[in-house]
Image (cartoon, rainbow, N blue to C red; front, side, top):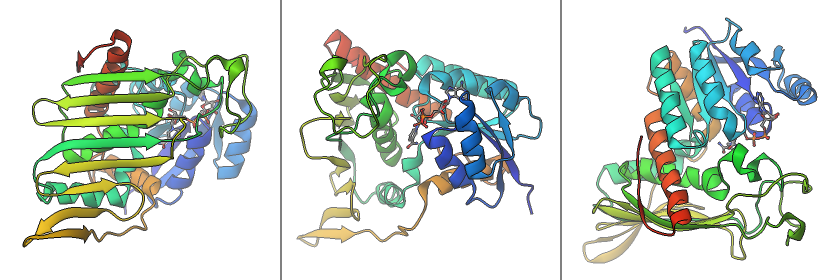
Length: 355
Ligand SMILES: NC(=O)c1ccc[n+]([C@@H]2O[C@H](COP(=O)([O-])OP(=O)(O)OC[C@H]3O[C@@H](n4cnc5c(N)ncnc54)[C@H](O)[C@@H]3O)[C@@H](O)[C@H]2O)c1
């Protein structure tokens, strides 16, 4: 039997807890240490997840030689510095989404990984959903033919993660709805189709709901009371179109908040079939022997996506598999996000530049 992989979690907030719960379901993993800069939260979360060691800074945790690997679960602005420090300390890294603040920093993380000879896995948990996997397999088998259009619609009616916290402060988050939630759908769309060659983008981002802060128009957002001393200088809505050379296009409409029905799906259109990844079972819309046919895909829908993500990270460290989401893919996703923001700012179509 392989030796258990010893994990340290950096960041004891919402997703840090999700990681702790997920590792607890992986037999070959043991979370041995937790770090947070908030002492009360650190104490409470360590007790809740029964984690023996606590550290007040990431540097102290990384100096612990018993730790093999870390989950980086801190605000986006701290992803690159902490991931790079972790590689310098000889740890493997599972890095939460978005990879970092921009593509150049993403490339810096990959360079640090290469210099350390350690593993980097991106926290793209939606790739672990069984629905996404079964659609990816159907596309790989040619069931949809050539994919020429992807439609992403990810609309929250009321879902800004707090007002005036780090999520709504550009210097800490890098952006709003686009970098926070669209990152999942964009990554998933490119992974499912294998279209890792975004070339050009025309997009517009908007900031309509949290700014100006004192005129916060809706009280039904879900993330606690407003912090009027903070900032809201990020996007809450984005619409755009992405070209993948001459091969395919992708439309994108994503909102943290807007006055519309909440929906969340990615639709893949091919010349042999089309399919939607969203609520409910995936149905392949196609034609058979002259009849229009709706084919229900059969899959195991009981998988815990976060536990699967951590299990694959641990297996890769043990040499039993590959990381399921790479740093190189993370850099391409970040390059596309950079281009969307640039297109909006310049008010024109721009090229996707991958550093
Ligand atoms: N995969 C997903 O579905 C998913 C869901 C939620 C959040 N996330 C990502 O996880 C990250 C954290 O989000 P969250 O919702 O948990 O935020 P959060 O605010 O709930 O938690 C972040 C924690 O990090 C701590 N922290 C900040 N700087 C630190 C530092 N330098 N060292 C140690 N601790 C530090 C904070 O005190 C806080 O407790 C973000 O990048 C976010 O995008 C991913």
